[in-house]
Length: 214
Image (cartoon, rainbow, N blue to C red; front, side, top):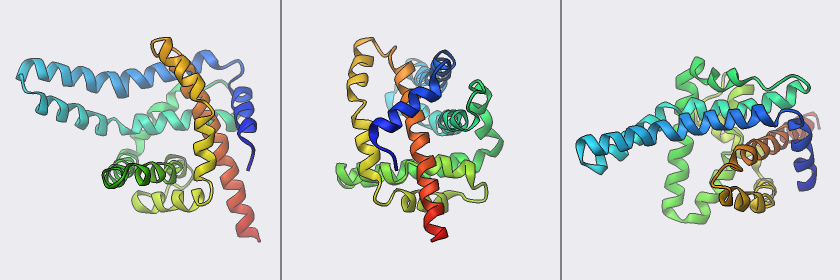
């Protein structure tokens, strides 16, 4: 596994010359996965004058759109694998081709994380990192789904959860700057973070293969 600085340097290298398309990908994601549910929720609140129903509607729409969440992560994994090729924004929508496997697995991840968080915040936080490789696994192992994909992520992240947490923590300054810029910085920080995560996953895969060979 690489050092934190190594993952950050590799992420910058992978995004060099591609920051514009990366920001567009982030904007599309925020509009679809965040903006659409919020718009429907507020519209329902105005029409129905009942916030509980409107909030539920927004949550349902987000669940329906979970393949976009998957696709947004996969865009940056595919980018580091293709090297010099431009970022393929169409990849963001490929999750809909395998809709139920992608959606239901991500829904399970969300449910498990929520249940652990309700138990105690720290266990929920730990589980979030345990499940963090699930979407990459769904891409690389088309036969895996639901608990099988989640369990593989947990196995891969065993002994590495703190490493990924520290990588994310090292970007806290950029996150604060993004908030100061009214969220505009998130259009660049999010691709940066996800690209670092993608490199992290690739190293986990290499480590896993080496362990199998031994």
